[in-house]
Image (cartoon, rainbow, N blue to C red; front, side, top):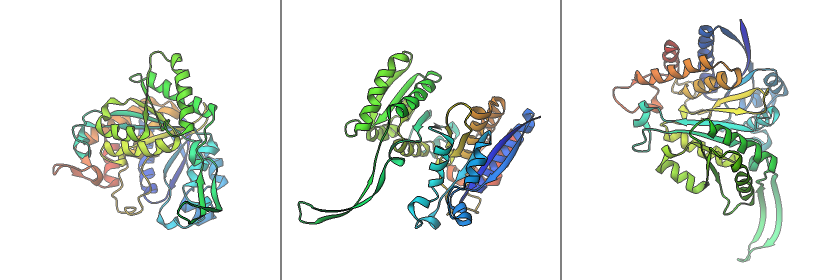
Length: 364
């Protein structure tokens, strides 16, 4: 029997609960499709800081590199808010992305018709957006720091401490993520929207120049442009009109969270981080560690379960098992099962994390 090696980074807060749910679902789908898994538990984030004094131990990165794919829960929480910036739990994510060469982040935002009532946006029956986010460049990875200045401002005050973060992109970084955007658009509705801030940022102007030069290579794809502030409004005003959005690291981070809330809950939003062929992909829910509900059973496991489905499809090529999981999630929602974050009707069957997981497994 085929056995896949999966590194599981549960992380902090609700991370262990939702990754545990996804592992159960993967095992069931694999059993039905005739393959198995070898799961390796790894530490990263706040729990790694507590154990080792650093957010990303080298052993974790080595285990991930030796795996077929990585399943990640969530990292961080207020417990570690005051640690040295270079040791914050979130640095583990940046280290994993750069260490594994994961430059493309796929974040689908799909409106399940059963959850339309839970959306804060009125009359949004259909929405199927794929956000393609550049993952290893931009302001998160640019030069940053602090410096002292004795410059006197116009009001007579002294400038004092200055903090800076630099947005920087190369032609190669932009080109490879735009290729991904065009390619995914070709397989969907053939519409690609580049989101930037080209009226202000020089880096955004380079994105537009490269996109314009590449567009003739994809004559079947319609390319348009939106400033990020306008896009944030249009996602609310006309979410169903978008197909594929390609954008920079920080803009993609923000817009995908917004898109997730339009679908009814950020607890529904999966993601995949991919690199060159042969690189193990990393799959995680878009939501955070939610330490305030950790251990209460309120966490919605669907985003992580759908991330596991993406893992099967994109890294392992097990499309039948992936289809089983996605259909099971739809059937579970159609049968009225809801965690508290997506409940919108008195007729909903409110279940906890374990109950939602069991309902999905039953329908696989």
